[in-house]
Image (cartoon, rainbow, N blue to C red; front, side):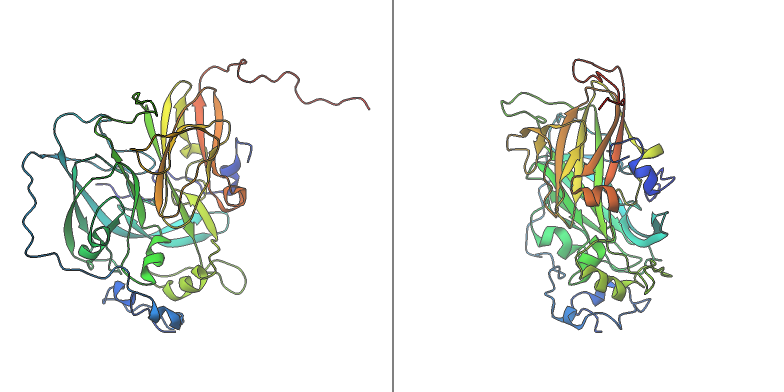
Length: 405
């Protein structure tokens, strides 16, 4: 599989973010083991209080006396994951019986430019080379079987916690693996909705990995598809998958962003920056401008887009400027969707789905409506919509002109 960070990203200039829109030490005892033994991390400035953090993602042993899972009745299929903001091929309404969906991901550590205007960069910790990791789609009752590989040249231990799964810390307790190792985890999708997944090695390494980009989303569709509150079927023409990422990039005494030779070298400095709880950047799909300009999302008047928004660490308030959330599922697909929403809420550590049918052409800014984050920290995307203008919905009666006093 091709590994890319922010595929298609040409420019991360803040000017492109607004163009065309109205916004125009001691190591952590719990986490130190997450650094690969092949390279000693620079931890001398790490906050000593990290040593007292609870190891929330400890390794676990699978129950050896448990009976093997009964896979009779399941059909094995392969899902080819694709880079964000796109979604893998899938059925909106499941046909046939339950599937056992095979997927493969690789934990890739990549140096990535976050903002070209300032030179800010990060050693991103990723699934399949992108921030966010690829979207996984299945149906309620399906099994997901993930082969997860950690390249031999990685610096760190990794794992994966699926919020959609049940048991062993979302699988995090069963998937700790070091560079050069692979593991296989299979879990059943019992709850329909959109869910976060992320790396959770333990202690301070949990927020370190998540705020370095190691998170993504799973969508578990009802077997009979999405429905409105009255039970009528809802269909979408495309999916726009947005991962909102907060970064806490260390700066030097002059206020310039620091650079590092390898993944993990920023650990001690990052812990200091993370403790402020104030992100230096809050961006969509890994970098400033990743979904604007040439990389803007595309649609046509009359098309229905399902927007899936993941935020693994902080609360967010998505808003589509010039549009609405016709149907919004902030929690489970089993609950009736909220309707006619102007702004919806993404709880930190969750993913949300919002559906909208575009009615006018033009550029729509999709933003975190904490506008400080949307306009100043980078949390902005654009939909470029083609079609004919409808004056019944909006008309410029008089353009701007001087008036007599």
